Image (tube, rainbow, N blue to C red; front, top):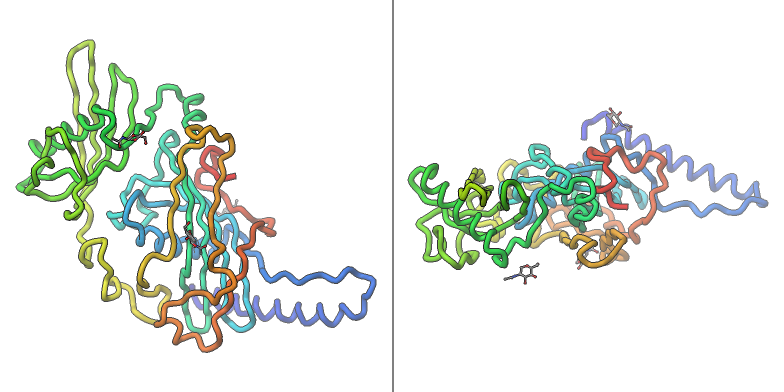
Length: 380
Ligand SMILES: *[C@@H]1O[C@H](CO)[C@@H](O)[C@H](O)[C@H]1NC(C)=O
Ligand SMILES: *[C@@H]1O[C@H](CO)[C@@H](O)[C@H](O)[C@H]1NC(C)=O
Ligand SMILES: *[C@@H]1O[C@H](CO)[C@@H](O)[C@H](O)[C@H]1NC(C)=O
């Protein structure tokens, strides 16, 4: 945050406390009025730099902490509520909607460099986060988050686009999925691999579509060779290896033209940038490169993730009509907000207590505009 918006925010806080003063002066003079319970929250607009910056920082944290799945992209800011318990420190209660991209989280790319998936293969969701801000100490810290996502309803997609590819279970129950993985990987190793062979690690996504025959599209993680037995290509049992480190994501397809008795296979692989830290599972002992340890806008990672992502199934598969988005954020309330010890030492006053997460926005300027406003990918 720049100096200008900082002083602006300080002026805002001062202005609000003056308002509070006037309110208490007048309430004695107007006894007939129903006493107003002063709200504990201040609503902020959803399309200004404050909300967008917090959503950006939070989303980077979420994507960085995740070990599986695809990077989320911001679709819109839904609600920004501030609770300032006196003093310069505030807790923000942030709600925003996300879309899955086609970049794997292990690529560690910034979400802004990753495109959302096309509508028919969208996965969309909602995140809630607690965000600590101390303007005087220049701390912005994502204390907790939780997200819930689900795939776009296949029934709705099918009505709009009957020929679009539809997802299939990304396991080995369908022999065509297995075939698409092994043939595309074999093609890559034969034609494109320079030196080292790639080995199969794990399927991350699979879909099918009828073209001139069945076509299968697969996405899978790969490791670097030499491959262990059962890992290099056209064998019957593809099992994910737990002791290897994925180095990239391959996208392959297999189209079977039954009429002409021919198969066509395509493949492309993208490699992750090598990480400064060791395996993704292990906790860094030093802050990530580029991040200053203290008094910064970003804090070093604490032990363990600060939240979870819950993946729900297509509601059609479960016979539900309602597309609910339960995002649990209640376990933090009533307690002081979590800050890692290294930041706690910079906050002189007591840490603010977390309130029950506000359910409804009171700002007319929320939700903000959505990057993809299609109702099929917006949580209700
Ligand atoms: C949101 O903010 C951007 C940048 O300030 C502006 O261009 C856009 O018109 C705003 N959208 C809405 C719906 O207010
Ligand atoms: C594959 O996934 C489907 C649907 O999720 C499930 O019904 C099936 O049992 C799974 N098969 C295997 C071999 O895990
Ligand atoms: C986030 O969700 C997980 C699992 O659903 C839950 O254990 C945790 O308490 C939630 N976090 C908050 C802050 O409520």
